[in-house]
Length: 107
Image (tube, rainbow, N blue to C red; front, side, top):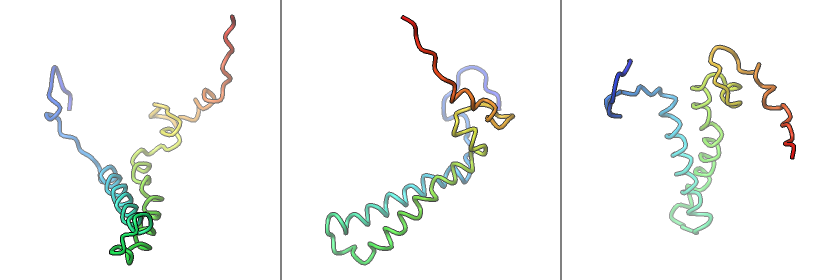
């Protein structure tokens, strides 16, 4: 949808995919599980002692898979991780720029 002239931020409707919405949900789940596990282990709250192992296992397992929705949404992982803006190619043809030596400054 082309926009001409000035517009307010709420005049354009953003369409977020499920993958983008899933990332904050999973990271919030990880944070909540870590807080629940730390209540028992660090602060010695005995009321949450039965949930300690489940909370720790949930936090660690979802911590491993929580970046996957963002990586799947980006598509070209090699391109996005190297910081290239090349949409048509793989972006690896510019990888030599990362390893090129920096010339020394003469004084």
